[in-house]
Length: 252
Image (cartoon, rainbow, N blue to C red):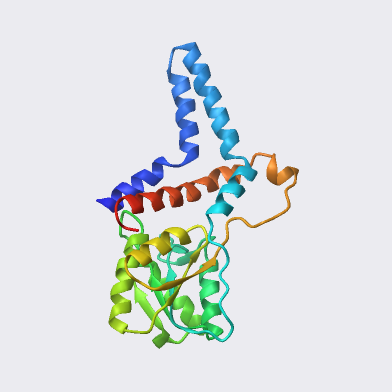
């Protein structure tokens, strides 16, 4: 039930839907004053959520800062969280814009910093008509030189909370020495760290896939509205709301 409700909640948190809803309401209502106010509100929301400076400011403050691992240190397991790949209707696997997580994991492995990789990622869709993401990522890791015996698979999790729950079962069973390296996107790390610590898993966060970086302000990235930024807001809102919902429900 929690999984279904979370999907519905995330759908309702998309700014573009708010704007469309206001415009539809303005079209339907008969009161001229209310119609005007609805349109003005839609314009204001559009300007706020398409502003690149505001987006960069909030996301940068939410993202985990880069992790520095001491030279010569190595760890038994790196935990790679899913959310970077999916399948087309023919069952072929494809990466999305968060695939930097995989690059970071392979770099840690081939540098000798982590000895094994635990892939935690099932099928996050409401309809389970696709294979687990972890199986596709396993095949990619094998092609990129990771030994089969160094790959652990957790294919059941559908969200961050289940990533933590199911990963703990595997980590407890293999009895390898913590702490473990937790690898996910910078914007997703705060919620992930809270969930894994709640499960009693000793982790060191290793961030990747930065949505924003520090850059010099100019006219284009400060003032000019951006349709891309308007679309990107839903990821930030999802993380903030998800983090506090997890806190309130005792999952983090």
